[in-house]
Image (cartoon, rainbow, N blue to C red; front, top):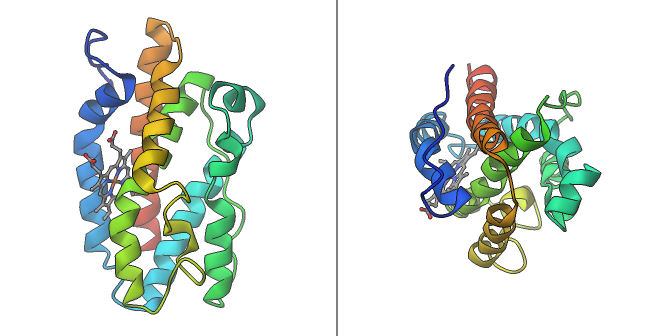
Length: 194
Ligand code: HEM
């Protein structure tokens, strides 16, 4: 697939990523809701499997030394262990460890943009889990807000990502990574809820 990067004259890398991936976001959003993940605990358990695959495949990026230098504090942001705890809370078996994604350093930034941005929509998903009797201490830990609040946490992440100096080639790769992340999420959803 050919990905056309948005013009570099537009302000803010994340704003450009958002504009260039909004169709992908909307299709993922629609697929999540079509899967009815909050209808009952069994379906929510499947949603946790999707999250386990996606966040597990990104764990090595969150732990990567170079990426942590570029984005200080990145290591603490992974939600994979919270997903594992949520599966345990529900008494569900842990799926096999997901394969780590393959991405260049610049593409990895796009994957992380997608993963961190998903925390914003998670506010909406988190509210739905309450109907299932779940919360930030039991079963829905990975959807809970960052202690600083979702908006502030996101603004800080955006400032760091926007502040990185990248050349034109890397800039294009960031977008490739973001689109690949949405594609991968869609594929996990389709497989798990097939
Ligand atoms: C039903 C599921 C979802 C809903 C309802 C939803 C909703 C939202 C909402 C309301 C925002 C904030 C938009 C804004 O402030 O302009 C957002 C942002 C975002 N979401 Fe989702 N989302 C969902 C799933 C996902 C998933 C599964 C991913 C990633 C795999 C994702 C990635 C993102 C990203 C990257 C942003 C940040 C956009 C930006 O401001 O740059 N979302 N989402």
